[in-house]
Image 1 (tube, rainbow, N blue to C red):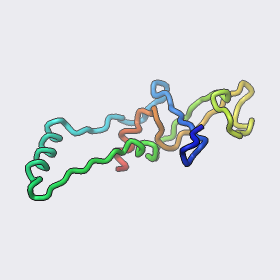
Image 2 (cartoon, rainbow, N blue to C red; image 1 turned 120 degrees about the horizontal axis):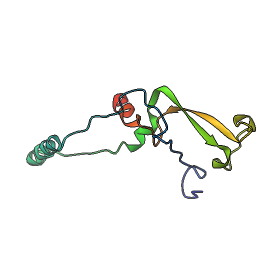
Image 3 (cartoon, one colour; image 1 turned 120 degrees about the vertical axis):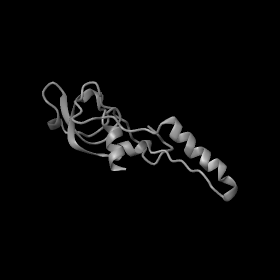
Image 4 (cartoon, rainbow, N blue to C red; image 1 turned 45 degrees about the vertical axis):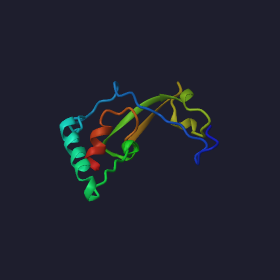
Length: 118
């Protein structure tokens, strides 16, 4: 429980990437150190002309990426507590299958999906 947050009752769930199949190349391009140095040095050398540098953190962008091919997660009902889920969602042993339609923590293709949609 997070009493000082806007969403008091919240949790995070991760998917085991070692158990999910990625149906695409999951490598996302990254900037090399040489490119980053050149970019920063140009900004520093033009500072007297008023150049400024700004960065942004897009870590939560992974959570908004739409997946073209959905993944499925098999989870035990004992892992989900304090939620009013119908017993119809689970089988007789207490397990349910959940469809993952958007990026979430632990999915292999989260980085490449975010890159393509950015």
